Image 1 (cartoon, rainbow, N blue to C red):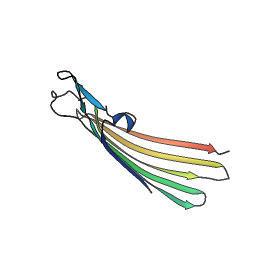
Image 2 (cartoon, one colour):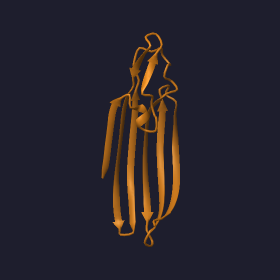
Image 3 (cartoon, rainbow, N blue to C red):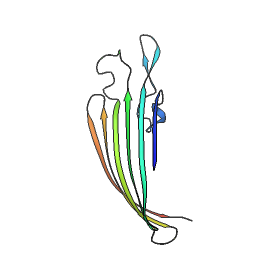
Image 4 (cartoon, rainbow, N blue to C red):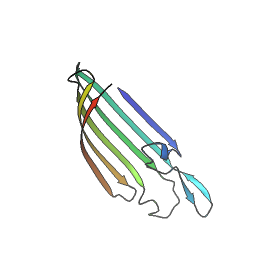
Length: 128
């Protein structure tokens, strides 16, 4: 079982592949206002047999922008996202892994616009 949670200010570029900015520049004061970020992920790996295993995982991220800006200032910025995924790996012979993974994710902008991702991946790996 794996779980990780991250919360902080000015960490947007380090969490979720630059999901949110670290800070917002305020032209009137020439200061930077902090952006708060919360992210979490969890996963559980299940070994069904010596050659068959799977992992189920989920993640979430939310950005909290500073107040006091004009309405619509951050409309094109990421607000929140989440995803869930599951995979199945089979090792038919030593050093060979074959796998399949399915993922569903959603992202919402500050404006309320949203989109989703559905992905099916296949993998073949030889360990040497």
